[in-house]
Amino acid sequence: MARVYRFMEVCGTHTVNFFRFGLRKLLPPEVELVSGPGCPVCVMPPEEVDFLVEVARKPGVVVCAFGDLLKVPGSKGSLREVRAQGGGVRLIYSPMEAVHLAASEPEKKIVLAGVGFETTAPAHAVALLEARKRRLRNFFFFSALRIMPPPLRALLSDPELALDGLLLPGHVSAVIGSRPYTFIAEEFGLPGVITGFEPRDMLEGLARLLELARSGRPTIEIQYRRVVTPEGNPWGKRLLKEVFRPVDGRWRGLGLIPGSKLALAPDFEEFSAEKTFSLEPKPLPEPPGCACGKILRGQKRPPECPLFGKRCTPETPYGPCMVSSEGACAAYFRFAESENP
Ligand code: SF4
Image (cartoon, rainbow, N blue to C red; front, side, top):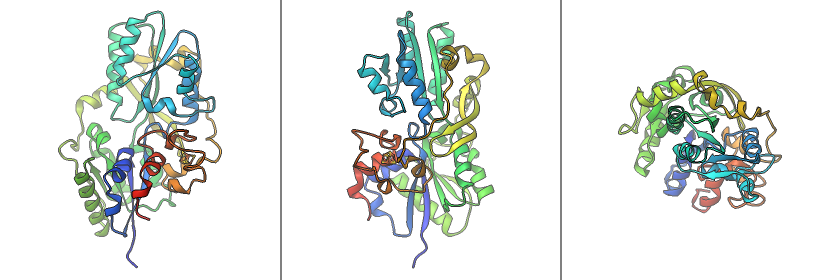
């Protein structure tokens, strides 16, 4: 029997696009793909959702959040429910919208919910710099921003995962470059290919990953060369360094990971939503029965969760992996019929 190579597609957009473009049907039987932790709202622990829900219920407060986050259930409901009950929740498409809102409604406290990885963090940094420039006293920031390399180290340290390589995220890498991944090759002896999002990119990246794994060459390569360089984007990296600092952070399914979250740098702490509202998110257990944690660790496939497609659907999500369009459960639910058996 042919040896099976087990690769993790780290990024949620890759997970969805393998289904959307029908690429999974083209994969040879020797390739097994497992989903990784690259969906920002899926990896938010429940206490972070609860923090935002609690703040949004306060009079005179408006929480500004991207669409996916609104539906994520915490232990006290979701931001969508708070909004339906008349609470202060605003759907935004750019962090700068929250700054404009704070400037135009000075009697309200505006809280920007910062969610995403290194890809979206620079846009949040720009919003914070603008708020400081305008001397806004009613603009606050809650960070659920996370950094991608530390969870990869945590995952690869788990001997049960047994991966043969990683398809690495194109957009995160456009900011950080390829160098932060060298530990994957040097410490874990695995190859990784930073890959774009068009069908051709993904097939090319996967084919190269298979080639490297087959020939036993642990190295990090860039397939997405039109966007990613080894050094990354100096402007984006400078913004992150100026506005944020890395701190230990809890990830759903992965627990506490050193240096994996972006908190406000000391010069920006005046914007801290936690300090303003004297609330500190306390670790909470995950929803009972939800296998999201195991899915994010590549230990289970979504259809193996007993709630998949029954109690948990994109319309009525029980766990976060069913909420986001980049969530593995939502992708399997939408495209399951096109998957290889
Ligand atoms: S199907 Fe729903 S309950 Fe099951 S793991 Fe996915 S998100 Fe969690």
